[in-house]
Image 1: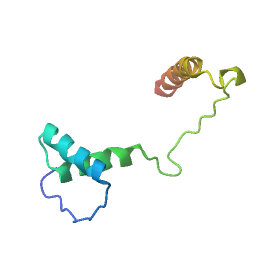
Image 2 (image 1 turned 60 degrees about the horizontal axis):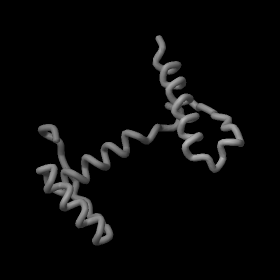
Image 3 (image 1 turned 90 degrees about the vertical axis):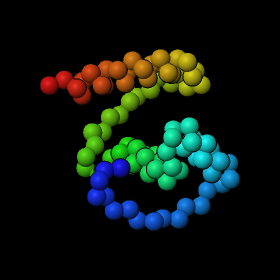
Length: 90
């Protein structure tokens, strides 16, 4: 956490299993549970794209791949690689 950042206290209800997992994960990482939760929330929120800040991509998936997890994953890998290359070209 950066210096001078003000924190607001927030109450959060989670299942016992989740609470135990957060505690053990924080202990392994050497941080507090609060710090771990803040980090997880920040990472998740960074994945959310604001309206108008996205590039729409439409994939037409071949029907023969329905139900074929391995084939679909291979096909998606090729497509996502091509999309990444196209979007990163200058």
